Structure formats: C-alpha cells, structure tokens
Amino acid sequence: MTNKFYSYDLTKSEEDYLKALFQIIIESEVTKVGNNQLAEYLKVSPASANNMIKKLKGKKLVISEKYGKLELTSEGKEIAVWLVRKHRLWETFLYKYMNFSWDEVHEVAEQLEHIRSAKLIDELDRFMDYPQKDPHGDIIPDEKGNYELTPKITLSHLKGGERCRLVAVNDSSVAFLKYVSEIGLALSSEIKVEEVVEFDRSVRISFSDRTETVSRKFADNIFVELL
Amino acid sequence: MTNKFYSYDLTKSEEDYLKALFQIIIESEVTKVGNNQLAEYLKVSPASANNMIKKLKGKKLVISEKYGKLELTSEGKEIAVWLVRKHRLWETFLYKYMNFSWDEVHEVAEQLEHIRSAKLIDELDRFMDYPQKDPHGDIIPDEKGNYELTPKITLSHLKGGERCRLVAVNDSSVAFLKYVSEIGLALSSEIKVEEVVEFDRSVRISFSDRTETVSRKFADNIFVELL
DNA sequence: TAAAAAAGTTAGGCATGACTAACAAGTTTT
DNA sequence: AAAACTTGTTAGTCATGCCTAACTTTTTTA
Image 1 (cartoon, rainbow over the protein chains, first blue to last red):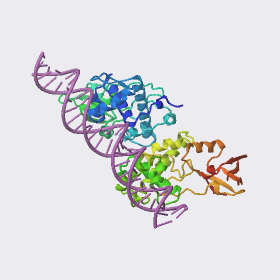
Image 2: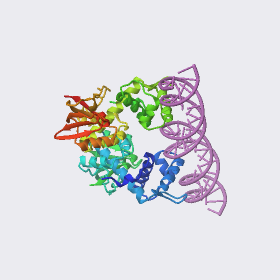
Image 3: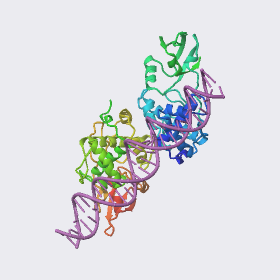
Image 4: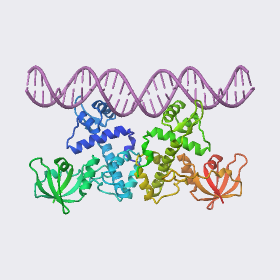
C-alpha cells in the first residue's frame, strides 16, 4: 500500500537531479556522469549542479570521489526509476484519456511526476489497465521498479534498402515531436530507407505512400526495430 | 483554448495565499480579512503573511490600506475561483475514478491544483462529463468562473424533531472526514435530529436505523438542507 | 612533458518564502 | 482618556536553489 519511496522526502529539485542522472546513464549507455554534463542536461550552471550533488551525496543517493564522476547508489537509482514510472504513466494518461498530443504530454507530465501519492500512481496504473509502454514507445517500469531498456537502434543505423518499424522517439524536444507527427510518422509506422545521402548523411525514407528526406539529426532521434 | 489565468505566473505560495483569502471570505461570510487571521488559516507567522501580501498587492491581486483589512481585487478573486475549480475537479476525479475515499482526496488535490495546464483541466472536466459538485458536496465553478455558494445551514441550526439531508461537509480536516464516514454518514444521508442536549449542545441524530450523539463542533461542520 | 583546455569546486550574491523578536498602530476596557 | 490588549509591520535571520567569477584539479594535446 504505502510505497517505500515515501520514506524519502525529496524536493522537486532533488528529484529532477536524480532523474536526470538516471536518464543520462540510460541514454548515453554509461555508468558514470560528469558534473558539467549533468549541469548541461538540466540547463543549470556547473556550480548549481555541484551544489545539489553535495546534498544528494549527503543523502546517500549519489556517490563520487572528489573530482571524480557521479554514480547513482542503488537507492538513488530506485527513486529515479520510480520517478520515470510516474512520468510515463502520466504521459500515457494524458495521451489516452485527456486528448493530449504526442508533443504536449511531456511538459505537463514533468509537473505531474512530482505529485506525492503512491496510491494515485497505483490506481492510475490499474485504471489504464497496466500499460506496458508510454506514448513515445518507452517501457513503463512496474511497481517493483523493474524495467527494460528501450531498444537503442536508431533510424540512422540503417542502410539504403532496409526496412524497419518505429518503436520509440526521443521525447525531450517538443519541436522534434511536433515535426515527427507533421511528417506523418507515428509509433509502429513502417519505414523503408530509400537512400542514405553521402553528402550530409541525410536519409530518404518512404512510408505509407509518402517519401521524405530527413536530416541525420532527425534520424538519430527515431528508435526503430529492424524488419 | 488557452486560459486567461495563464497570463499570471504565480508561485505555488502565491496561489495558496489567494485561495486562502477566498476561502476565508466564503466560509466566514465577510468581505475583508485580517492579516493575522490569514496567517492563522495558513499556519504561518503573521510576518510571513504580511510579506506575501505585499507581493500580492504589487501584483494588484489584493488591496488594503495600511493597518487595514485585506480584500481581493476582481482579478485576485478570479484566480482564486479558478484554483477552487481545479481543486474540486481533481477531488472529483480522485474520488470517482481513482478509488480515493472522502478523507484522502483533499491532500492530493492540494498538490494537483497547482499543475499548470488549462487544457488538462478542460479535458478532465469533459472526461468526467462536467460534474456539478465535488465529493464533499461543494459546487465546482465552471470554466468561466461562475459558481454558487454552498448552502450555509449546518446541522447545529436544527431543533429537535427536524429532518434534513446532508448536502456538504467541511473538507478541511482529515480526522473529521474519517469520523463522518465511520459513523456511516455520506452525502445525501437523511438525518433526523432527535434532541439537542441542553448541557453541552451536543446533538442526538438518527439516520438509516442508527442513532448517534455528535458534538456541537461536529454539527457545525455538517451542511444540510431542510426537509 | 609542459602548456592549454576542460572539468570540477569554492566563494559570494540574489530571490523566495519561511521564521523570531521588537515595535507601531488601532481597539478595547476600565 | 489612559492602560492594556490585539493586530499589523519592520528588521534581521535562515534554508533552498539558482547565479557569476575565480580558482584548482585533471585531462588533453602540441
């Protein structure tokens, strides 16, 4: 009933930092994170990040040696996963029940993920019948904190002629998400790579009767599964 | 689409103070509120309240003369009503869809009411099919800020022999709400006042095959409609 | 390997929103 | 109407979380 993470009483900021550390670790497939990297991710100054890290070290949620890189303790990681679970459940709720579009969910879920109520999250999960994935295709950690990593193959890994299915997108940029849907792509879209342009490595793709050319940067943010 | 209250960018605290002012005005049927009264309501020191009031005066949401009582400007009142709308819609959501009990909704709704998204509130309203009242029987202001006052007759106004229906409860105390449901009372319960005890003005009431004696303080927090 | 660059840290400030203590202005009470 | 009380205000402090500027340590590269 009562969730074990409620023994921690973290501020919104502390939660943001833990989640950011976790996201960086997942996204860049590393185990340790630099202070400045964290600061940049959160768009704060290195001094601010350093300051907060001190606090989190005091709470035994982060470890590092002086001048060394940052690691999450297992407790820190558990809390971060719990925050990711809350975020993704809220995104799913907004998308499926509140008529939010792909690019609208993130901002509001950022606020909702800080709501303190384990019961609300459990009930939300039940209400939506225990969804496995959020609207961007990312896997929602379960109530025990188990989760799978989202596949890391991006559209830019493919060669001309190969076919794939869109399984997830990088949800961090509103502008990007908006563009994805404007083009006509969505989760599960089947995409054929027609050609990878040598000059700038942009990618000509075709899907549902349409052909588009997308930039390398765009292709880097589209996660796919080979067909 | 975009809500006019989003031109204001108030902090959580500023919102809390505006809402508190509004609630005091409604609950005690006055038009002006003293600084210390506000401080006590919010459980902060008079100095803190005074300090925040200065800020709200600067934003033209509150007026008062020096050493005089506080009034909400029409803008301040509009924002407060909007906050009440959000709070009550969330309470309704928690109660009807998330299996929250009467006494659990308030605390979480206090957090949810600060979420910034007019779209979310509109959609929540639509999703629940435009509810008129929250789980405590209070009227939910509509999207234009129109609202009716909850009837102000309490159980303690009745004399022995009179009958009434429970239309609302004072939702500010968890302990009180818990007690109300333990006794077996709920919205729409029909109550007959058997006797008002002279000694301590406690009230003997009967409802659905049961007889209970409740204190004067209890009766003051139960809003009823005469039958 | 020594200089340059990058990364991390410390010191000192600022805004927010709490606090206590002291003081001033209004309101009662006698 | 003066004393006593209540209410409102000001001043100074503290924690949080952000900032810039300056400094130190580590890493890179010439």
